[in-house]
Structure formats: structure tokens, C-alpha cells
Length: 319
Image 1 (cartoon, rainbow, N blue to C red):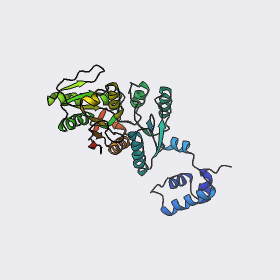
Image 2: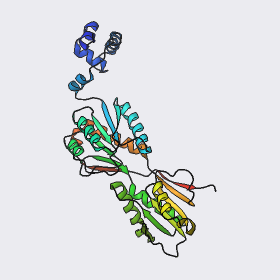
Image 3: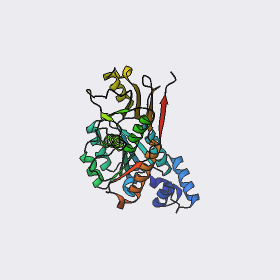
């Protein structure tokens, strides 16, 4: 037979309200009473009814961290950082994966609307489409923070990097290292890549640096000897080289990318990696979420927070 809170209270010779508060470590209950109730509850095998407690207190002490997968460093580092910070505030973190499947996203949003969590941090999909279900959830008053990307027209907090500045820094490093022409290959598919593309173009125009937006028929002036390839990710640079094998023999090549480059720069001469501060992004997103949870009057306001770039790493091979 299941042991109830009433059974624990009766055995401890206290009322049910006192027993409940003692098990929640309410400081208004004497420490000796809290210890006694906890000890007896453990001995009796009592397990709290979390659903009933949630209905009573209006809180679950749970936050969902929603991502498409755990394949990237952003997702794993951010989830780990947020979980540790939330734990310090007595919140448990549930990591939920939607694998870019919209019906799964809709199901998750539906469950959040039913009160299974007190708030959520979401890294939207790469395409970042307008998601009306998420928008309605936020407008209803649910505390939610976007990390890295946002879902357009949704009035809440987004924590991201200084993407435009990062792209400009990559251009600057390539030019300072000796490149005399830049190829910008940043696909404009969401607000993050849009800011990176615009940042690279603006830097080149401001500093009067010759550049071209990449396409298969891109034309490079005959006087160019050293070429810089600026992109969002390493695999896009490698795809350019696959499409343009003549570049490997015609130019001294450098790259500028975000997040990482596996191994040495070869077959390029050298390169630069813009490292985003994922732990700081996750920390700030968690802090913003806690503010939304604790202060309902702050909800429903659109705010974008740009976290400074962590560093630009120089990658040069040993060959």
C-alpha cells in the first residue's frame, strides 16, 4: 500500500501542512522537525506525488532544454552549463531532442503549455522558421529563452554571439596575414548567418578590400596571388576547394571560419577560427530565464543579447 503524506504526518505527530513544508526544507519549520520528518518519511518509503505538488505550488522546479541533437559543441556545452547553474537554484533540467522533426516540436510545445516545466531554453532549428506554436506559448506567458538563434516575431529573449563582428574579424585576420582578395561564402538562411554575411561585407566595404560573394562561376582578378576564404563552417570551405580544385595551385589560400577546423589547415596555408563563448551564452540565457520565471512582468518583451566573441585562433600547419 502506498505511503501518503498523511501517514507521514500522523507518525511524526504534526499536521499535513507542516510535514509538507518540512520535506521542502521550508526555513519556517524548525530544523529538528525537518530532520525528523525527512528521516521518518525515508524509513516509511514515502515518495511525494509531484503532480499534486505542482498543482498546489504552481511550480515543477523543472526546466526543459530543447535542441535538435547533441552533435555540436554549442548544444553539449550549453546544456551542461545551463544544467549546472539551474541545479544551484534547485531546478532539474530535462534535455529534449526534436531532431528537426516539426511534429516532435509541436508535441513538446504542447506539453510545455500543459505545465510540465516552469520554463525552457530552446536552440531553434538551423532554418529558424516562424513557429506559431512557440509564439503562442510565449504570448500566453510561458517563460522561454532562445539560444544562438531566434524564431522570428516571437516576443522573448534571445542570447546569441556578436556574429557580425566575428565575421569582420575573420576578414581582418585574413587580410593582415597577406590575402589580397576575399571570397565570402556564408549562406544567408537565418538571422545568425545573415548577420555574419552582412558583417563580412560591411567590413570589406568599410576597409575597401576587394571581395566576391561565392558562386560556382565566381571571377577572381588575375592580379590576385593570395586568396582568403571566409565562411561559417570548415566543411563549406572544403566544399569550395572541391568545386574549385585549381585554387590549390593558383593561390596561397587562407580560411576564416566559426567554431572550429579539424586538424591542420592543409591544404590551405593557414587560417583563423572565431571561437564563440558558448559557456557565457548558456550562463546568460539561464540567468535571463530565471528572471522571466521569477518576475512575470518581464515576459512578453523582445530582447536580443549579443555575447562578445571569445577569441580568434590562428591555425598554422607544421608541414
